[in-house]
Image (tube, rainbow, N blue to C red):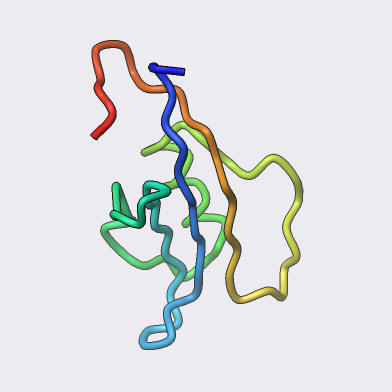
Length: 83
């Protein structure tokens, strides 16, 4: 649909700082958004992801995994255009 965009959302633990971060990329590989800071707790990172994108993981995620990735279709805000 015209008012939707397909993206890949990654949530991961930084290998440098150990903080949790998220990144959203278009299916063409271009980064569309990311966390502006690292989070000590994964739940805080997921909260920031939800606040910024309006999306949160649909199912519980394993607590011991160092990274997660989802293929997602997001609805664009009214008046937004896909890039």
